[in-house]
Length: 127
Length: 378
Image (cartoon, rainbow over all chains, first blue to last red; front, side, top):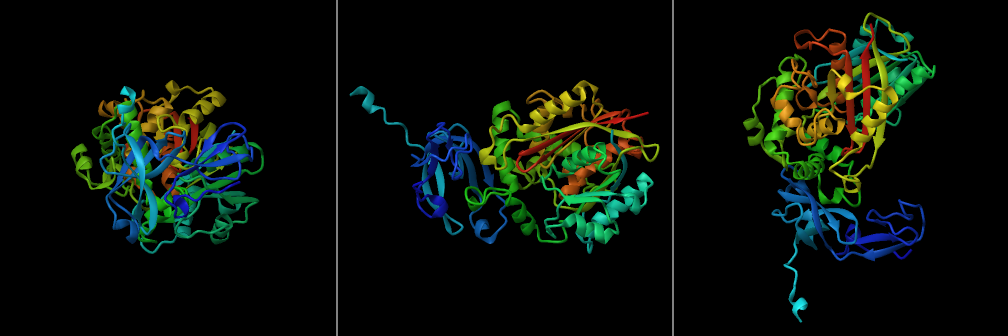
């Protein structure tokens, strides 16, 4: 399997796995499909576009590195590709917001951080 | 058939200078005395874990320390659901004839044995090591995520959540062993320090020292006859990111299995003991278990339904939120209190009728669920 680098190993990218046998999409990397057990997985880069599913603003952190960042928003985002992921988010995000990912430094690492997506460009419709 | 023949519980809060083994031993001695048994009659030991003193063989460490040479012993780890999971296993072992008397025990000096930062940090590790923990979430943040979604879905407000903290504190006022004895109001909860919004300090259970134990036996050993009718589990995920949904949980599955295997209906239940690590946990679980309709548990708190003198007394010792939370022993206190209520030994807290009880525990981030029915036998 061709392994793509992503934010969990320092690359500014979000990667998911797609099962060739059953079509299941999974976010936590494994050598097999957690739905059907097949080994035939493809790794794909995600667009970074999605919808906010849940949010929690952390105001009390537990380590010196993370305390320097409070408050920071932990979010669950439903990616357009069909998997759910945890990430950081801008503090003003609400459930249902359309968001897109960028990457920020947090406690000495690169982590995905979602912000409200720019208004969709609808000019193409009128051409 | 299996019976809970004895229970033991220490006070929760600070036990300066006590180790996890000390607290386990104290609770175990109380449970043995309550059952009218001596150490040598115990042939099975199930114990929880200690985050302060981790060990790969805690059950035999404890057995040696306490002075028992059992024919069956090991530790169990299912987070906050461990106490009821151990009880379910003890029930199964006793019914299968493997052992006669199982000592179920847990205790931890979680408050004085480590710094608060260390406690928060240790627990946050239930998150995914690659995809969650590097983002800096805490246990309150995992439950904050759950709260935001559940509140969005069913229209719960922050005031609704606060009602559960106030109720648990009111119950704790009547228990001398509880960690907190200052009354609080909804306004106090709303004004408390933000921890992981929407959860504030008083929406969260404290970190405590304490221990709890009980004995599960084949036959009653005293006049206290409390039978385990049946139990069931459901495990839907480990990490909150991988939860199938935050609107519906495994509790609904576990209780359906428990009802099917026992024939007990929710309308038969007279007393409820439900895991309450956070206010949102209690609100969600009550609704999942069918003790209130979706979005309506807080309204039932306001009408007194879950009060000591209400139709469905709930966690009359004060729960994790106000009796305290010492790890595995935390939720075991719910069972100890249930037993005292069922056997008419709850003193000033005694409810009118606790003849049939529903208990529910949750571990992880609403990951593991155990539902159980207990019945008083005359």
